Structures are given as C-alpha cells and as structure tokens.
Image 1 (cartoon, rainbow, N blue to C red):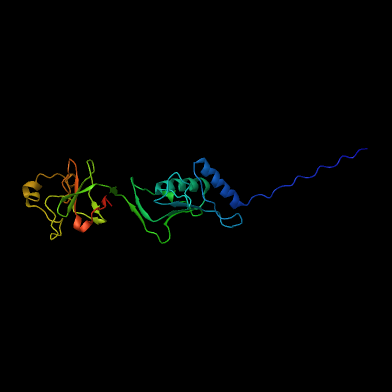
Image 2: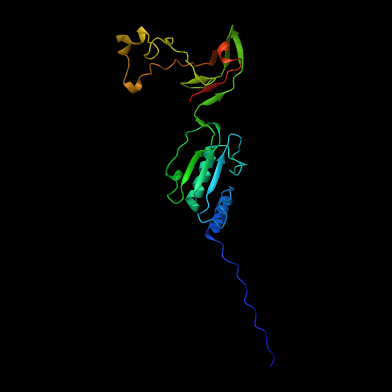
Length: 240
C-alpha cells in the first residue's frame, strides 16, 4: 500500500501588537480623510501611540502636518485632530510654531477639541517660540508723502474697524471731538454732544452710538502717520 505523506502544518505569523494595530488604523482613517499622520511610538512601546500635528506660518494646509511639512492654519490642524480623536481615540498634540497667525474667522473650541481622559487633545506653542493669534487684518498700503514728515496711504473702501495699529502701536482714529490726552474720560467730549437738548434725542442705551467711536468715513479712507517717528514704510494693521 502506497503511503501518502502528511501535509505539513502552515506556519502562522505572530499577531501584531496593539500599538501597531492602532497606528495602522490611524493611518487608514487618515488616508480615508485625505490626511497623513506622523508615526507614533515604536511597536514595542507600552503606551498607546500618540499623534503630533504641526502648524507653521511657512506651512500649507495641503501638507501632512508633520514637523517637516506642517499645516498653515490652526483650523486645519483642528479638523484633523477632531477626526483622529473621534474615530480612533488616540492622544493628539497640536504644536503651533512661532509667528503671527491672522484669523479670518472666529476660532472656536468646543467639547470635540478636548478629547477624552484616555485620548486627550493638547494645543501648545513650540518650545521657546512666541505664538500670536490675531483677529486683525494686515494692510499693505502704498505710502506717499503728504507734507513734511507726514505720510498718507489710501486703504480703499468698505473697511469698518475700531482699532488701527501702526508698527505695533495703537493709533487714535479721526473723531469728533479731537482726542485730548489731558482728558481721561473718553479722551475729551464736546459740549454739543452732551447738551440736554442732544441727550433728549437719544433712544435706549443699546440704540445709542458709542461716544468714543470715530465718525465713519463713507468714501475712501486714508491713513496718515508721522514719518519721522514711524519710519518710511510703516506697517499698518486693523483690529487686534
């Protein structure tokens, strides 16, 4: 009788460790969302892998969010952090590098941005770097000499603002009455503005114009600065 050899038992590869499976899952979810994540700790590490996302003024929101290819905006990093925290429950650390970030809309943080006790989300400035979040709008006007040491610049129309900074210093906007530094209350008032006849025409407090607000310019708006104190090419910014 012919003897048939017994087939050998197939060998099985060891099952990947939990950290490895979690890291692979993070990469899969990120690819599905059009994102690329940084690798977490090595497979032999005991803690669950964490994800680091980087933001830089020199980055781009089409990048991967790595230290060498950072995002440009905090909003982009926020959306990515939410995806990771909500779907994979992995700790996320958003590192914002030094510079001024001009926000075009309100940056809002809610419960989704906190993560959980086991998978927290942290936002931090890069070590030793200064980060400024600004709601202002940077202007790049063309300055020209008005007279003597005075420069002027046309900033166009349609800008409604309450604060103007030139070279980092808050400016006094055109107003009525003229600003008087010797008057601590509102920088001075005018007799006709607070006369009994004028007060009698005012409505409820929420309908009244702010007494310190400058008169609005309905046409084109001009910036005027002293060149001797501000330099030949001042930097102007609206808001905070």
